[in-house]
Image (tube, rainbow, N blue to C red; front, side, top):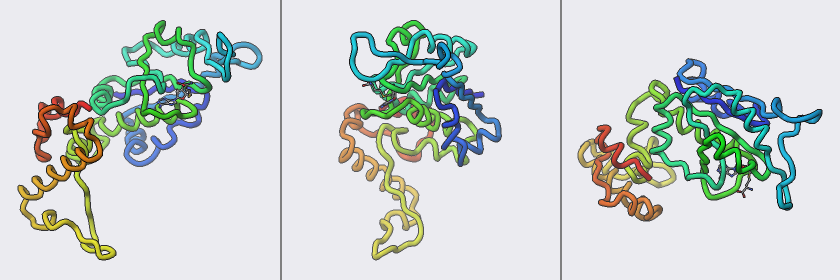
Length: 247
Ligand code: SAH
């Protein structure tokens, strides 16, 4: 079973949004497990300090390596990857999410303040992960994003298998536009191709629209999937996924 252990100063932030909908139902059904541990329990002295001033001076506080070391060492080493949420980390991509989702789970360190003493990263082999090129106030929201992305891929969490395999990034590109009822809304109609009932034509329309949107919005994805978009939106075989879900 996928097990998530969070190390945070704010354990009450979890499961938070992961306690609802798909992830929340799956948590209740014990398809995955979540445990949030309070870093403060490993704090030093009367005030249970977890941070101190930066060596070399400057603003803010840095989380202490000794405190974080104790907190990490209190989590049994069962082969789970240990992540450190960090804007300097490797950008999170769907291929990586898929790999973690298929494994035993994650231990996620969620810093606050200016971040952590650099020595903890190497000493404990932490994988630094970023959820984008912007700065959050703490690692908790980033950890929620990582776990949400993983949990929805756990077998049994999502209803129809297709919903996990024919969407943005899974084929190297972005998803085609979606429509539902009513057929006409504020004078706007649904593209004719989607109403024709011809499955081949619908598949072609979706593929072409997905490609157009990817080219317009994310030319970087087109370049990375060198060779274009060979996968049809109907092809759900694993080989095309592993080859093309790389961002
Ligand atoms: N001084 C740091 C930013 C600290 S923000 C710097 O300039 O790089 C405080 C914490 O929020 C970070 O330690 C990290 O855990 C989290 N965080 C902020 N932005 C993030 C992002 N884009 N991805 C992942 N974690 C992030």
